[in-house]
Length: 225
Image 1 (cartoon, rainbow, N blue to C red):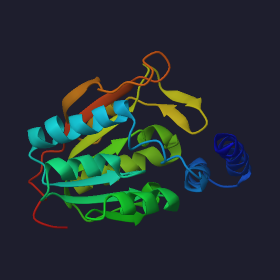
Image 2 (cartoon, rainbow, N blue to C red; image 1 turned 45 degrees about the horizontal axis):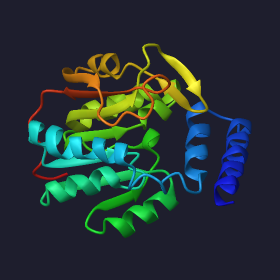
Image 3 (tube, one colour; image 1 turned 60 degrees about the horizontal axis):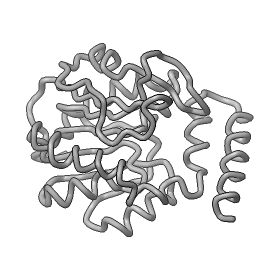
């Protein structure tokens, strides 16, 4: 019954979002902010955990990243696993959904989580070693993507993006976009370090996840914001 109610609420939320006036990015933000339980199944999913462990055990050490900002942190699972492997890392998670953040704070009390629309997020230059996204950029409409990529490029030395790429650009569902993140960040000055299929694939035919790691070529930001 709970699943049915959630499905109905998602449908109502989608209809409300599409009827709103204004930029497509604002409609997408309203939709994701209103979802009641999209964070509830993330923590124990073995495929999702495989991706989180890959980040913590391979990518973060490979980059030597001592500070990580996650845009669209959802349940906080990625940062929680990173914390287990890197107890001294400086970590921050941003999300637009207050219910997801409440869950994240309860599960990971040593990590800072803040309510923030990532389409309107910004911090000072070179504030972080790495910025992480996972199935977040593929929910950002084109009218907000370029400004978000510019913010990432100015804020961190590295970007780690695990996102939908099925070989073509465009919308694949409600606020669900296939986008070449390698081309996106290279256009903003990144040097590609990784561009490959991500661990922990859900559905290779319908929604393949590609992992992009890029370097913007600046000095470490681990010393502070």
